[in-house]
Length: 143
Image 1 (tube, rainbow, N blue to C red):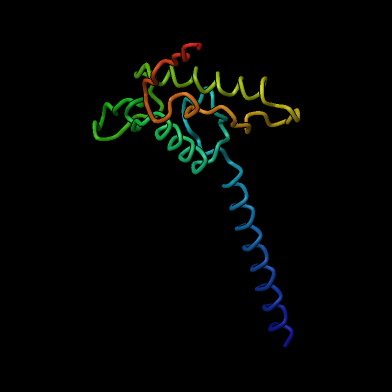
Image 2: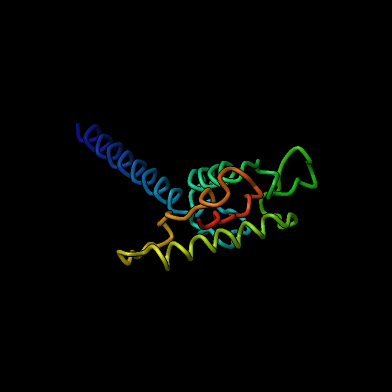
């Protein structure tokens, strides 16, 4: 009977240890940055889903596809090399992202948020409205 209790206790302890190890591993996996390369404006800790959603928003705001800013892979032209800086539009996009972040932080942070990067009053769509080359604003003539 003592061996049965001892084995049962060891089995329970082993189960608790394995469960704890799984929880720690899952927590570490979620806490680890996804390892994106060459993020210069966006946070390096951005989640894969958040980055994907953000890029889809940029695509819609400019009416373009991913290849407008991202270069083709040199090893497989059917794929994109997201880390590459070979396409000048990516540099322009970084400047525009920084500009909108600064406008929102400095002009629309009325509540002095400690996360001004989450304020999205001015977005790419504010000016672009689905066009990669938005029309210039022409003020109406005065009467």
